[in-house]
Length: 143
Ligand code: DQA
Image (cartoon, rainbow, N blue to C red; front, side):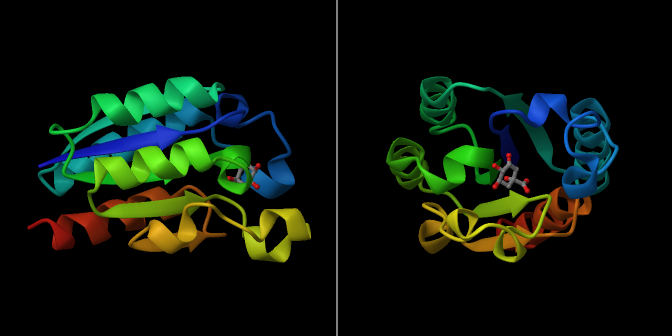
């Protein structure tokens, strides 16, 4: 059981970037926590980050036939990208959309997500723990 985790643009700057919204943990810290939770749940996990929309599309295409579940924080592309939405539809596996901050509490342009209505579920506002809850949910779903 292989889970693919995708982090979108600017998430490589976590730890330095707007800590009031996104906390003090770096992406490497978060990826380590994801890896150790995956081990605990007997899941295999790969994590991927890119600042480029097309690279995220390529990575999702590359996961076809390999990943049985997807956790994706498309970051700013959440609110703009039909291409990432289409790639998630194509991958066609249980998908949890994760946001560190609560997008519904913030500017109105962040309230719209191009992923929400095609995802299995959305976790928003629970910080880095959201990724770990998403792994637990997928572990049950793809038992
Ligand atoms: C984010 C929320 C997005 O609106 C923002 O553009 C991000 C991060 C989050 O994790 O809270 O870059 O996806």
